[in-house]
Length: 145
Image (cartoon, rainbow, N blue to C red; front, side):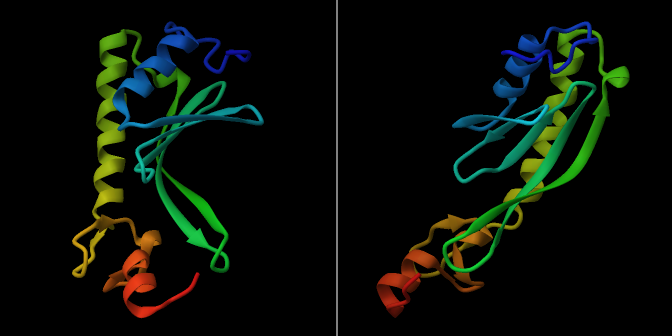
């Protein structure tokens, strides 16, 4: 890791990233943006965590479609923890992160829909509408995306 995302904390940046990664559903993706590390968990993505130099943000992840071929991630903050509020022990930090991530995942998964045709439990962005997933819309209705 090139940048000390949490330079003033009692836990090292590497410890924080490992705690976050261990609390996320698999697969885990790490994306580094301007001054931020974004850590995504799940396929489809169920939760997003932003790690900045002086704060950590747990996001509710969703997708907005701009046209039929341009999905844009939408990250709505549900918890912001300033570095001054981080617990100093690794176990307390792990408990905090696990709770925040679990809450975000519950919120995200509550938006998933079961397709009555194939039975797949899918996020809203994978649905053609509230009643049929995109895969079934393509194979059964002839919809082209």
